[in-house]
Picture 1 (tube, helix red, strand yellow):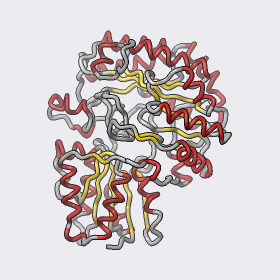
Picture 2 (tube, rainbow, N blue to C red):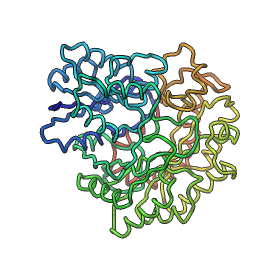
Picture 3 (cartoon, rainbow, N blue to C red):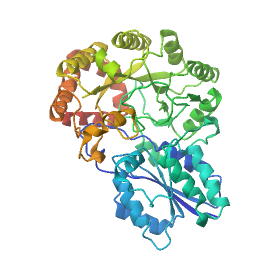
Picture 4 (tube, helix red, strand yellow):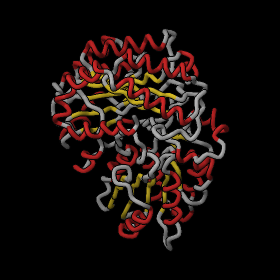
Length: 472
């Protein structure tokens, strides 16, 4: 079967848009890779609509389907958006000659475990990392009599059995390209120590994470599985150059843990140095994977900011959420990592979680105390959220009762508290956390002395961050 038009769609709900906490929206990575791969078909018209940066109701999306007349629609949705996706697909399938609909995204775990609303609506659902598997499906759809539906049974069976796709050849993925509007929309809202106007570019260098943290899910992750799959240093450096040609002035690695494959990190840094690259970059790392020498090399190769998940100040909670991997006390590893970054002039953004299962007020106070001690340049405070598809979901889903699980979002008011304090008090404790951290005169002086030049050139980031006042 020959296809003429494809619609790639990330739907949007109000759950993650109406929260008080400032946030940024990163690209729909799987859809962008698929878009790039479909560009090799000159006869094919490919359209991408991202509801995260331009929220649209189902009625608008249906009007777009009528206008574009796609034969294939790929719909990506998280658990807080899956109801919107299901409503859209149900309406599309009522059309006289409905298109094939492929579902992707973490929200389909909720579809399977709770709603069962996807039965008969989606022609195929790809869990995990769908980028390469999509093109296997695409070839199958083109080369066979689609009316026979063999591929539908194959992928529906895989979905029922929780088979998660993985990218086995990350170097084989095409480089996504971005429109000027996308480059404006996809950006971090946290400052970096640069005195210039910045345009963010996002890329994934390694996939997989070997650690068993039970709270982690595909809402926060960009990859699946425990096996590490790294691109070559040359391939990554080439994509950074590709982004630079589009106007990107800082690259953000969205790997689940950029530093897991230390050999790759060293190879990439050496490649960037050999190319005399001037592109600054940022990444997320684990505090138990880095050392001073590795950070020094990263800094020399252009690293300007690191995100590090501290999560909690109580060792009991760290053990409970399975964050700790090495025997050295977690808090001490955090102190060491943030001290090294500060000595090397690398900016830091620390991530914290409150409301962990059985967590007490006193343990949340320990987390606040540790945060004050680490003194990161910026912080993000999340609520513990057992997302469908995560280990936490399997552990705690029976305690969620009749709550509306599509309202679960780690920045929104928790639908239920698993801690020793109520959901309402958790909201108050988060506000207290931010007030104690941000209202210190020494913090304000140090922060603005370091980032005043960045805010001067990027006032939109400053005004976005001021949205934190609604949380306070």
